[in-house]
Length: 124
Image (tube, rainbow, N blue to C red; front, side, top):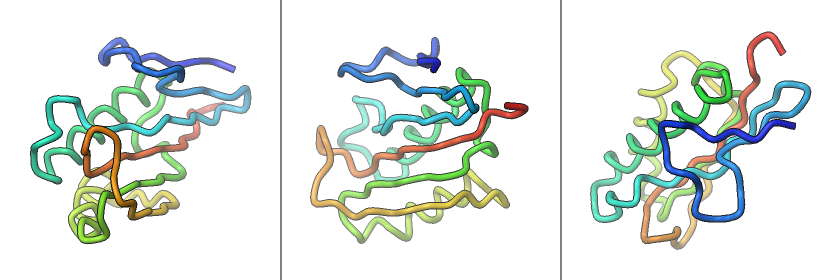
C-alpha cells in the first residue's frame, strides 16, 4: 500500500491521506473540497477547484483523469446537479466513469461540492 501526497497541494488537515494506492494499482482519492478561500464563491468556481486538485492528486499517484473508474460527488443541495453535470462533462469529455451524485444538506466549511474518486494506475 502506498500513501500519496501531492507536492502541489497542502497536506490534509485531518488524519488521512490524499490518496492510497493498492498493490493491485487501484487509486482511492479521499474526498476533495474546494480550496479553503473559495467558500463564498460560485458553485462553478468550487467545481473547478475540486477537479484541479483531483488532477494534482492523481498525477502524484501516476494517473490522469482518464484513469478514473468511479466518482462519488456530494452536493449541498440537489439544485446544483445540472451545474455539476456540466462541470463533470467538461472535465471528463468522452471518458465516462461510473458515478454517484449524492445530495446532502451541508458540507464542511459551507462548501457546495466534494468529490471522491477511484482510479486505476496504468500498467498495474
